[in-house]
Length: 317
Image 1 (spheres, rainbow, N blue to C red):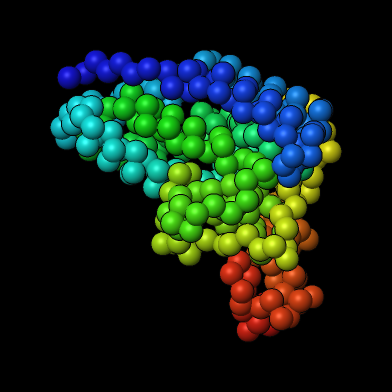
Image 2: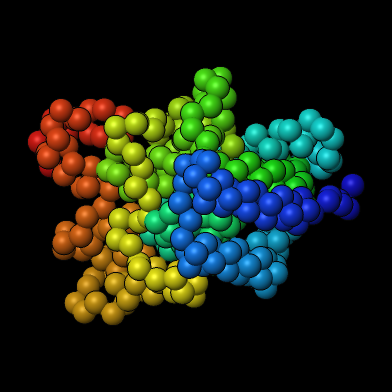
């Protein structure tokens, strides 16, 4: 079986996306729910969403070509039974966790992902602030093991669409904590607010797509605290509503650091491409590790709490 046909899940969900955003906007503007909208920011997010669709149509052949080439060397063809779809969803959700973690720890991938974090507001429109350059990073390589095992690329695309649907509704402040069993297993608005926050304790946390169990398993889970409400955006906000600048600002900055800085060694130039965001060859900038340590120095009673280093680790730096 080499022909697969599935409904276009994300396209079919567009009316839901629009309706949900309008509902949240009404609830926030009438003060019936928590949250905040800024018109220019919302329009930028919508433009980023449209650009993401256009980029997929233009550049999507890159990822598809890679996966279809790998498909030639599959061990078997597992088909598209319910158990294959369920298993593919679970494994691909784990794949997404590691992609997402890499995207925050490797500047090359952060350059395409940072635009999703560039809004200083957190509402359903933020979910549409998606990358235009994701097909250029090479992260499609993370999907190839599943293809080699016999899961067709169309199956992977289909199950990942449901992952994206789940991630849409968790971009909101109108929903607080949910049922304990759901918070324990699934990614929720509370968990994802942490991920979008720039508070030191929340940096590099909660990478989950659908299942928060991956963060709990791999030590990256941090709970949202009432006493430390999330502040959104990126560590150094870009202060623009121009979607083109949002899409490409980090690529420009990254290549500028790597190739326009005089006197660097090859290793240092590669460092600007592949070390974590905030890395610099002379230590003049601060990444998440340094920001967390600074916070603990200012607030020693917070040392060792989830998301923050122990006092002895800070003292050793």
